[in-house]
Length: 476
Figure (cartoon, rainbow, N blue to C red):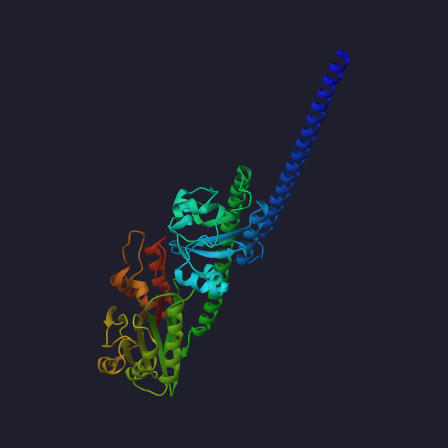
């Protein structure tokens, strides 16, 4: 009997050892599977980060980057689908940038869209890929306002989405994307309700890849903006070169006179221009003009005005009549908030007779060498583009002057007298008049260079705010 008891006890111990060994084997197998799963997740994450790094600064399109992020994050955390929404320029709405094919709706679906979707599933897909959502509403608004990632096991039960109907119930992880202290949007991934919930490790990994995704998107946007800016600057430089062709390549040869001009744009494209016209039969035209506004729009209007005046000037001996024709032709094409001020002088041969017409431009300055005085010439006239024709032609009148040898006539745009120094003080008409009086006896070109020096000395390091154009005519 004692031996039997001993055998029974040994059998029980042996069975216990076998059971324990089997449990240990199962635990080892489970640990090995967990290790393999962890290693697989780690490999997927590193592969994703590698692809993300390669995309930054490359020629990958923004749409391609968005797809890479959503599909990559979805794969890393073994999610069912993912979505990426980014803030619009006004930062009031989130715009869908990429939604994976199997990701359910995470935003409110209007009733009419749901009704259409019952007959045609493409209606829901089209709505989700195009519709913007308010940045302060729903689960996305919650993530942005919380400024931290969220792991929501049951989306339907979350307080931010009560009364919101979804196509399916899901668990979701989402994170606000920030770069350089600025919100970019929201990244979200989902699993179906009957799939295993996202674990704490899944959430930790998701936060990490979301941070890297925000970095990638932020840098890609900066890279794109810089590239677009370089492209725009290149196009503007090309436009500036075209515009330079429209300006006189040098001083004209006008018997009995010396004529000189300069144009210094405040931006790449100038709204000012000056021109010399050979009108035939010993007559020559000199023009200076200033288009309201700056930049490309002003430059285009300037080119149009130059072209029209050149085409009409030779057919009209009276400069005021020529400007009336120009005004009628360009008026329909000028916006209501734009106009052109212009001064047009016609040199009537070598005898010193000049006919002037002023279309709302700043007064010309006439230096009389005998008295060493400067007077302002302000013939009546309306700016081009303000009136369709009748009022302009009634107001704008020609004015004749006679210039003696040594006299000098100066045209300028308002960028000269309105140039400001660091204290905000304007150069003004008095300084311009004094600078011209002191230098006019030196001749057309020398007087312009002297005024430019006085202007530069006055302005100092202050930024040029407006185009500066000067044209001088000296009677020899």
